[in-house]
Length: 514
Image 1 (cartoon, helix red, strand yellow):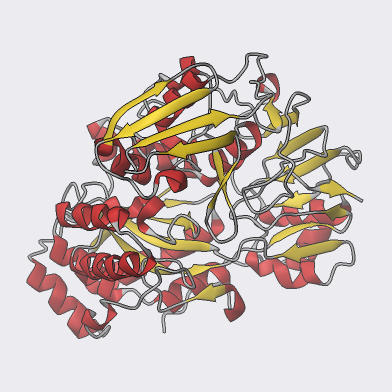
Image 2 (cartoon, helix red, strand yellow):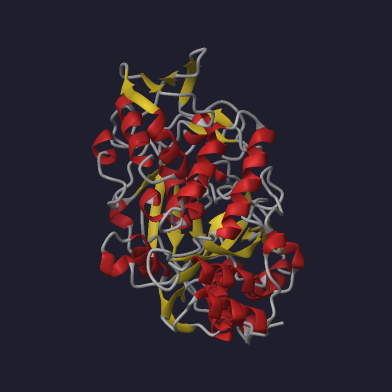
């Protein structure tokens, strides 16, 4: 087994006690939160970044929300009607919806928001070709008319953030620089300091649903007047601030520090997300050398998920899964199909596969975010793995924001100057093809696209599972990424914080201080 130096700090105990103090403890009506990374983007649809998604969940509301069984429940919608042939859907908004600018939420805002979301997200990309027309009927009602039935309609409408029409008209390939929604919190633009902090205040005009909060559905009751985001790249410093009560909630405490945090009387660790995170090595299949499918298959064959998970998470096997396929372990689509096609993972076989692929020593540019310790650890393993196979690897360290910018850029000089990078995805998104962005890769495989389309048209769970088997088999034949394993990341918070929700992301409704 590959052995890497642990990225744990050698002075863990001292680090918790010796980090510099921030400020006095926050008031009971203020929550100080340390996000996983700096809020470098406000636009999740453009960036796909988890930190933008967390901010979006505070500010925006959605038409529907997922419950723990990943079933869509009404959120902004008061009711819907669908025709007997499944071709006409009409939706009515509930009363009292208002943007933080004071404007009422209109049906045309919903239509425009759906249209922007559909430009980039997997369900939207599948839905758009089936749409005959989408229009507002009046201020509170809109309809979607289809060319053929789309069984995943309500699941899809759990995703679009509803924003004012004027903002939704910005193409999804251009980053939105402000977030104006109708959700439980208001983003405070004047208090945003990129790289340092952000702040949100409670939206006094937000009217929660009356149902109890349930995952991403139900009533979203905001109990804090303010939520302050404090960017702390030093994980040991974040843990020390938590211990002293200078911050209340740390989204991703360093795995190496968890044993000590568990022993602290005033700190709690909680697994709030059973689906966890999927870790992938993303390939740029648009340019050499990973436009070569045989070379990509060779790299997939070389991956030892245990090595990647132990480097990123540590030795606590209760926190990670190995031997995983492309769908979240324990989800309804989870399967082992195709894994029997993987060749032996021995050095001679792997070097032979590289030689047979026709690889000529082209540079493999590996982007690795140095400000995300778990991704940096996986990047180090990937570097040693690919170098050991005989690939010419150039390790490029950068911050996470720069990596996202290069990945998502439409500028060819930016989008083609990298070969691969490690990144994690929310397990709720990789639980099925519905929101599985990585399956499309940089250049979508037409056969994979057809299989995903067939999954969307599958009439029941058994038919969906059969298509998921075909999708995973196609993945091993033409992989857009390498699967590195999956893990659960507990959150850490002060003992007086109550009501932390089970959810796939950090959500701030229902939470309060005792």
